[in-house]
Each structure stands twice: as structure tokens, then as C-alpha cells.
Amino acid sequence: MQSLIVGQEPKSVTAEAYRTLRTNLQFCTRENGIKKIVIASAEPGEGKTVTTCNLALSMSQAGKKVLVVDCDLRKPNVHKKFGLDNDTGFANIIMMDLDYKGVVKKIDEKLHIITAGKSPINPAELLNIDYLEPLFANLAEAYDVVLIDTPPVATVTDAQLLASVADGVVMVLSSQESHRKVCQKALQLLNNVDAKILGVVLNKVTEDSGAYYARNYYPYYGHRNHKKKRWLGRGKTETV
Image (cartoon, rainbow, N blue to C red; front, side, top):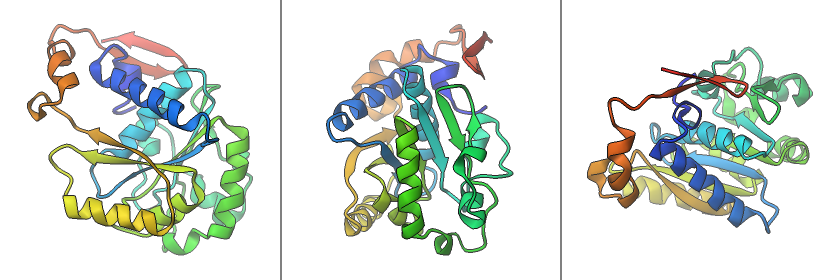
């Protein structure tokens, strides 16, 4: 499993940041019935998949029943983060009209995954809003939270389609890397489908970026003698 720092280093400043994100989302969604949340980015490489998976793990640790759906049919990565196979998944549900229950992969009782599955030749043509709406409505009935990982908004239209059937969108931006004009374009594209922007996650914050939280806790997080916990799944960890 890769980059799941919430499980590997639960006392780190980064893990605490994901728990803060979890809390903030709970406050802004609790009264509005928001359950289907797209985690998006403007460009590739901004960390949306890492954010999706760590947020999902954090929410499941808090007792929520969470489903992660990898809808990035062009460059899927969710299965890699959790060490799962990608033989069947979201694409297979649509192409073969499968029951999602037969495709779900269980990390534990609270955290379930639908990987991307076999990538189609034309992903955008596969995503039909008339099919997606009832599918995600069913998923929202079965889970407390459905986190939807999408391709970058400014690159392809997939994210717009998925945002149109979700209850809200969280944008992930990369500190000192994201381009202002591309971000503005992505937000405009989401506005075009009346997507509800719940907030923005600033990713890849370092000590040099001037972020207060990282600057004050970085020495603890980066200490060479700090023992790390590797997440083994199903609630198990080991010290490394």
C-alpha cells in the first residue's frame, strides 16, 4: 500500500491534516445531506488520489461507512494505493450492467473500494448521466459517504459529468505548483455544470511554503528517529 499516511503514521502532522479535513467536511455536509463527494484537481499530479484515499481511511476510522469509487478510467490509481487488483470495477459496472455489490472490494467493514476496472477505449462516451445518476443514488443509500476520484477537470470532460451527479466537489491544489489560469479554467468548467464547491485542499505544503501548521510541527514529523507505523489493513499496523 502506498501513501496512506493516515494509517502508516497516525501521529504525523499530515495525518492530523487529513483528520482536520474530515472534520471540516462533516461540519459543512452534516446539515445539507451531502454524501457523494467528488475529489478533483485542475491538473495531473496535484495529489487528488492520495487525498481521496487518506480521507477515506480517516473517515472510516471515525466510524463512517465509506465507499471510494475510482472513476479515473484513463489513469486509475486507487487500486495501487490499497494494494488491490483492478480486474473488475467501475467501468465493468457500466459496460456489463453489473450489480455494484459484486464489484466492491472490502478493506474492512467500514471501508470499501470500487476500483476503475478495465479501461474502455473512449471513457467519456461511457459516462452517461442518465446511468450515473441512479447508480450513485443507490451507492449513497448504502454508504455514509461516497468519495469519487476523477480525472483532472481541465484535461478531460469526465470530471464535469461526475461532478454534475455528485452533491459537492473538493478541489485539490498543489502548493507552489498549480497554475492560476488552469485552476480558474477548472472552476469555470465546474460552474458550467452547477457543481457545488465545498472547499479546497492545499496539498504538498512544506516547511518552506510558510504554512503555519507545517512550519511548527515539521521537526516532529521529519525526525529521523521517529518510529513509523506501517498500515497492514484490517486495523493492523507494525512498527518499522
